Image (cartoon, rainbow over all chains, first blue to last red; front, side, top):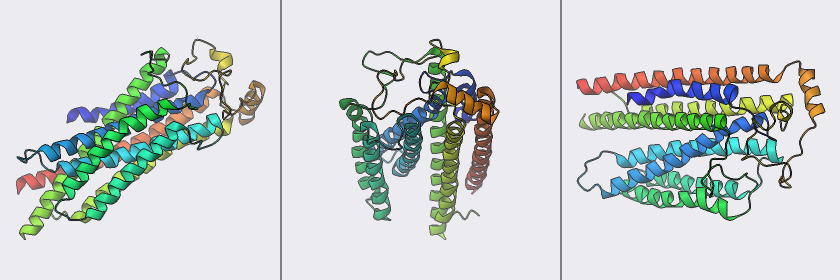
Length: 222
Length: 126
């Protein structure tokens, strides 16, 4: 997984591009630079939730036990997704204060993201409540699949169904990227670096989980 | 012999969560900087005009009711003069802070990675 270490190079490049190369946006001025953190964080959150759902599907369909600890790995991914989404919400709400005058407006996008956060809070509660239950993996994975199905609705569909304070989405029905060249490149680099950061953190957490598993095993042998 | 009970796992997860808390600072610092120096909406319209404008952002005419009104150019220029700093120096200092935070995080992540590699080696030797 050496490619993941590229995050150490890509993230500073992304920061430098965000502040030095990308121009400030019309009307919003320099506050628009939050987009290079806000959008990649939101993307990272969605990606993490989808990966956790995929791990859960694999866990439930893996009857030959080909993969190990998939339910733990999906839990790790959901954890990172939760943190990324919370950070995206915080950054979005700060931006909202600067642009619209208040931190929270119950905009469709803000409302749907808060519902999504509650769905995943319920997952973590479920995970904790199940404790050492032998069916913990199956129950939690089934819930995560349900949660993953709701993600596209809350992130892509519902916010587009109602009038919003948010500007037109960058990728819209016209299939056009409404961003200037420098902004587009900077945003792409930022998205790539946060994606790498997500996979790097997931890799670290998964390795810790494996070590913990072996350590517990050794202790049980004693 | 490795003794890595659940408590150690929790410690590691705690460290990762600290990393995320620092990331919040990484987001908040530039915003506070901008909001306190008056470098806000529309300040760069004068210098950048159409070339550097983003079409996906809201136009002034389409501005919804919740949008805060723009500070006049005069006011923001005065505010920047009062602080004695121009826009590029503020951007540079914000970038330096963000980069410093990232370097701190990177060092922290590298340390965790090295610890994990060490433990993995110990497991393989068993």
